[in-house]
Amino acid sequence: MTLALMRLLPNTVIVVFLLILCAQFNMHVIARYRVDGGEGGIVAMVDRMSREPISEKWLTAPPLTLSCYGPLYYWVVQGASRLTGGAGSLTPGRLVSLLAGMLSMGLIGLAVRRRGGAPDAALLAALLFATSDPVLTWLPLERVDFLALAFMLAAYVLASRSIALAALAIALGTLTRQTVVLDVIPIAASLLVTGGRGRAARFVALAAGLTLGLVAAAAWQSHGYWLFAALEANTNAAHPIYGFKNISYICYGNASVAAILVALILAARRPARFFLGCVYLAGFLFHLVLDPLLSCKVGSNINYLLPFFALAAVVIGIHGMPILRRLSGGAERMRVIVTALALLVTVPPVGSMARLVRTPIGTPEIYPAVLDRIAPDPAPFIVADFEWMEIALRSGSTPLVNDSYLMSLLWDSGKIDRAAILAALEDGSVKWLLLDKPLEATVKDRSEYWPEDVLKAFRRNYKRIHIEREALPVHDLFVYVYEKPKR
Image 1: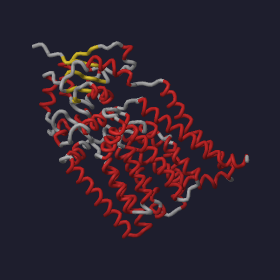
Image 2: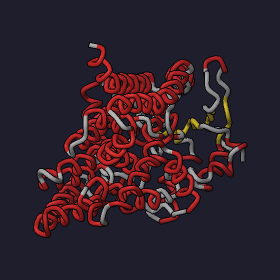
Image 3: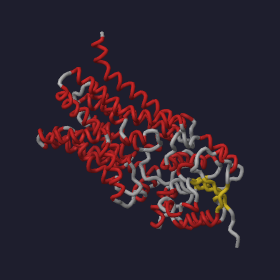
Image 4: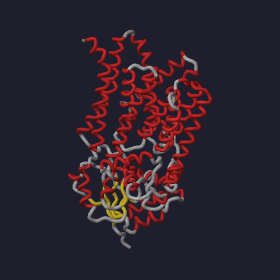
């Protein structure tokens, strides 16, 4: 009896930790802790899509509604909003991301099991991914990344069984986030080694045909919006400092360092062809190069490394655990090691997340105090920084722009009707500004997220009002009201 319990101990510990992590992620979703900047643009996009047909004019004339991603995540969140009655709220989008993240964990475990990995290897791989920095930072948020990741992982899992379904997963992932199409390269390379030229060619042809077909259908349905958004809103300049910052997460991430060590051990003992023979190894090495390069884009963040960390966890489960078993010298020692690893990677993030839950910031309790002040005096438009877009959507006014960062990228391109934007800030069409920093102290800091002409109009035409501090248990909401300049 005792022996049987000892055999179950590692798996039991890992399952318990996974359940705790998922429960804490869910608490973040429901209570809406840690409102992230990029969420505001997405919730405003979904809100407008639910009220009117999408149009290419959303990219050029106020109110501007911008996106740099594909439409699939927005469609899924729109459907979730209808089911939950949460239009204009962060909750439906966060629930979609949470479910997609949990599905990604399941696909990581399935990938390990299908390649002959033991149950403890599959569970530990899922746990290593769940406790990685990109997941801990991004999973509770309304962002497209985890839905795109789930489709990408599905393509890898399906590649050895059905190239048609794998190609469909690539196409759906690309319709969520455009970079998923690049995973055709490592999957096709692996199929070339394991299945021959014909199988690899059919996969590439199917993936290309399905992707082009879905992208063309989305462009037609939106009168060109999704096509032009993808082309115009992904013009970020590249800067090495962003890449170095994100690469640092690879250098000290538990899963990433271990997976790189596994790859080095395998490289010393296996021929180069072996790495292409395992589609997950091929994908891991591909993303080890690709993701840091993509993360050099100005405005990038750790979410760009999600595919790398997911495939790193799979590599550890498939190839790292057998190495560890041989080194451990016995089943009993291996169970102790797996249990210790689970404790080592899980206890710190669980503790920090628990502290965050006990001391919430940015919770919706601040909304009534602000809405009581601004809702009785609406105007056609309102301006809000990302974090406060949910309040803006409840105010009775339409956000002048849903994503100030994307507007700043397009401001000098000539595509945006700049005169109409500035006119709305001059004539009182925008009554209220909801900002995350005071204007007078952050002109330089804010220039990345608002064009300089817009910041000058803010300073010229708006004055700050004060709401009782006890009603605002945060220090990053600053409310400004239009005041017609004296002539």
